[in-house]
Length: 148
Image: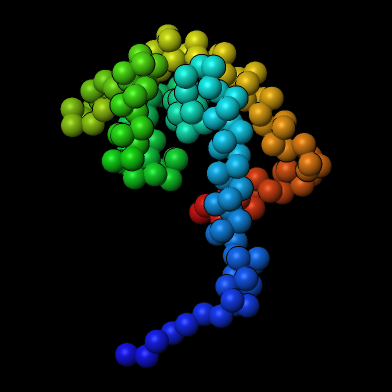
C-alpha cells in the first residue's frame, strides 16, 4: 500500500477553500451567539429550533420532526428528553398509530417561546448585521439548497 501525504501548502488550500469547514465554523459561531441569547431562559439554540418547529396546526411525529430538522430519530429523541423534563413539550400517542408519538408544546413551552422571540430577533439582527437584506436572503436560499 502506498502512503499518501499532503503538503502544508495543500492543507492551507483546503483550510482556505473548504465549504464544509467554513460552514461548520460559521454554524458554531452562530450557535454560540444564539445560545448566549437564550441562556436566561435555560435553553440552547438547538432546543429553541426544536421548540419553534412544534408551532404548527398538527403536531408532528418524532420521524416528521427528524426529517424537517435533517436529524436522525435517535438524535431528536435525545434532544427532546431535557425539554420534556423541563415541562416544555410532551409526547403523546398518535391516535392513528399507537407506535408513534406526536410532539406538542405545553403551556410552559409556549411561554418560553414567547419570551424567546425577542431574544431571537436581537441575536438574528446581530448575526446578520454585516449583510444587506439581499445578501441575507441569498444566503438563506443558498443554505437551503445545500441542505437538500
